[in-house]
Structures are given as C-alpha cells and as structure tokens.
Length: 166
Image 1: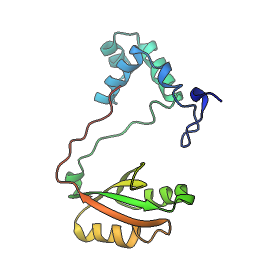
Image 2: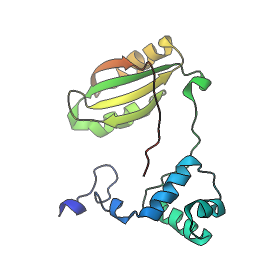
Image 3: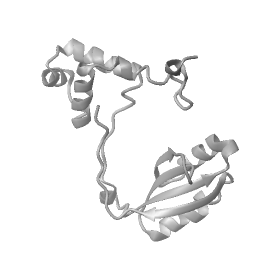
C-alpha cells in the first residue's frame, strides 16, 4: 500500500485522494455555501459564474466525496444560555480509545472532541449554563467513564469562531 492509498482510521477513505479531486470551481462553490448554505442552485451558479446544472452537479459530487457532510445553522451559544465554555483535556486508557471517544462524545454539553498527540489524548470543548452544570458534567459524567484516567480544564475567556475555508 502506498502512502496515498493508506486508509484513514476514522473515515476509511484513502488519505489525500479527495483533496486532489477538488478544483477551483469546487472551492468557489464551497466558499459560497459556507457564506450561505441556503443558496438556491441558481444563485450559487450566478455567484460562481457557472451554469445551474454545473452548480447542482458539483454540490452532489462534493456530497458523494464526503467533502460536504451536511448543512446546518450556526448558533450563538450565549444566546442559548450556555455561558460557560471550557476545554477539557483528557487522558484515556489507550487500548480502548474508540470506546472512550464515543462515550465522551455522547456526554451532554460536549460540543466537539479532538484526538491529539502529546500529554493528553483528547480535548473536549464543553459548554454549560453555569459552573454547577459544568461541575456535574466534569465530575459526574466525564470522570466516571471507565476509560478516562485524568482530566485538566482550561476555561475559555473569549473566542473567535470561523469556519474552515477551502
């Protein structure tokens, strides 16, 4: 197996093959959809200077390739009363990392979960209404998962959120 055909552990797709299939028109389509995922195909075509049928075909192809994984509304966590944001750094038992990842991802309040290399194995972004809810999330839910062997927390004081740009 070459480096280009080695499957990604999480997606199962060969590493790097999709990126080589994305051209400038695809990037333009993706940028416009990031700005407004509710665009009609006609408006998308106008903004990208392509035909409507090309816009439709490109979006469908990008979906089939797994580049577009869904469409979503962007919410302001504070407007929903989620005033506490913390990064929880987790050490886990290595032999069963998939079970740990899946259990942690299911905990209410865990917004994102990233596997990393270094001192910690996973980093979770956790959002809660207040410190009491965060305490319960950390001590009652996260720390009682069998595969979790330790945590450290950093509270977020300010954040800038920005989508990935193609």
